[in-house]
Length: 400
Length: 143
Image (cartoon, rainbow over all chains, first blue to last red; front, side, top):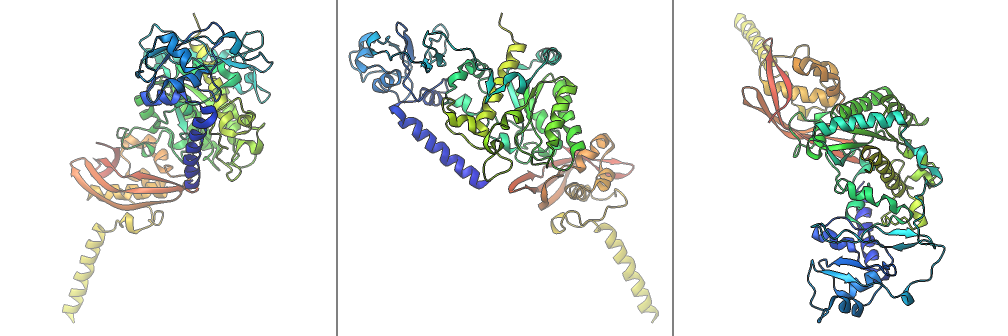
């Protein structure tokens, strides 16, 4: 585990350095982290404003006009002129800058490959104006339809949410709202396979590139803050039968006799909980089944919609016993199933690291424009988790 | 000769009395699982009862756990006994418990357990004790 941790840290440092060096870009989201601002999407490519489109950029700590110009693929002169700046060195953190539209002559030639196009964010809020998600467009300028699959596995196959489940979700969610649950917060329950920083955390901090899955940006915005929260119910070596056992709770944050899950619900007040258990539960299928059932029941009783996730590994032995139990429990409780195992089937080594039969292969870049993303366990795990959250959000909080 | 016999008898009686108050082995000096289940919950020092309970819990000794658990926690007996199921080498390190109030026992030390190469540590805290039928019982964590 120490080697994995060390490798993770080195990898993060290398990724960060690479992101900073690539194309000379300054990640907008790194500034966001420093200023504790809302999430933004960064791209390894300069963000080219579409013809006629004006972007308002809020200056972040560490930025200068040169970096901002590079970020948008424009020039210092164009920005100074558009903003009537006499001295390019005199810009302030928080200052709003007009990023002028690029002249038609500088626009890239349309290609069949979707190219990123920024959109404007509202300027009427008190929040700083940030870059909106990159919207990929086709040659005729219209966004392509959202992909209906990951690695050719249809979304409807790995997000199992028939009408009866949707109806039950709404009931649980409604009871949670009565209890004052935060509709925009989710929690996690699981073991080292979903520890930070690999599971979802990057979607709070950036940088990442959703590429053709840019339609998922609203769900990232909606649940902002939950992605990087490891919470009180994620712990190395956690078993299903430990989730409701106070002995396994964090004694620094939890009350006496409070279980990890009760503690997490109290502190985070979520409306959803992602349950990813089963890797450690070896040789006790009946106990596993009863314990996961207890976790589901506890969640429902507390107005939190449980989302049952399957796992990539076969640590419990042949037969995929635990995943089958998870599928059965999701169906019998009418709660949503995130059947990641089906997508893991498409990955080399089933998405597991080559030297590990439990933990998934890493992908630091979080750049879904790279084919490599669709060969790595954590990358696909994260993407499918986002898709599940998006689908659930649309059921629970449909647009008016 | 009579004196010797009398002295021997007195010695045996004293030894037996001493044994009844020190029969609870120190958890830190005995590996979990090596303690035979006790036949009674035992009265006496509540700190010793808590030590005995923690030792049984770490060992997965369901019988002793049930014997020492208060009635209010009966429903959690199985969960308590399976606390470290699936981990390897669960052990108690430097356990020292003292009674700090009428119904509280504070324990220092920790439990450690391995899962694969991943080490988990569980600090010992303060526990509630209650007397039921004249015997001290463990009754969960408290502040």
